[in-house]
Amino acid sequence: MEQELISGGMRWEFVNWDEGRHGVVLVQEGKTEAARRLLPLSARVRSGLEMRVKDGGEPVEGWVWPADTKEGHINHDSLKVQHKNALKMSKVRAFEVYSIRHTFLS
Picture 1 (cartoon, rainbow, N blue to C red):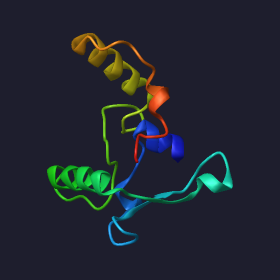
Picture 2: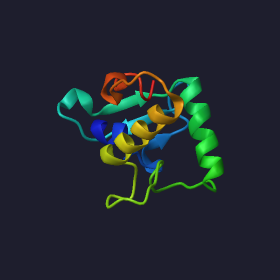
Picture 3: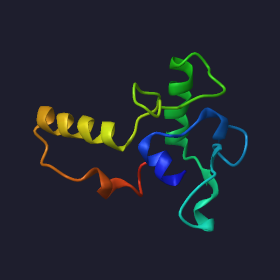
Picture 4: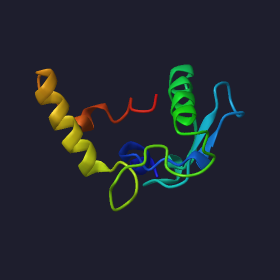
């Protein structure tokens, strides 16, 4: 699931708004036992998710980042294409998305 979180496979069922200071996300799968945990939300991430849930019609289940892919959500390949296009349009010096993996949801 940790890789799934990075690639867009996060589901609304795994977001708990009431637990912790700003809420938590349940990470059910990962490479190690330590990867499976409750991940606390920062105030900024909670705010972004609250906007996302409001814009999405207040869903309580389903993908947080749905997409027209085989999996039904944003995946690694679709992120790579979007990243490449954004770099080209913005003229920002190229960098690997993988480099920001540890700060994605924090």
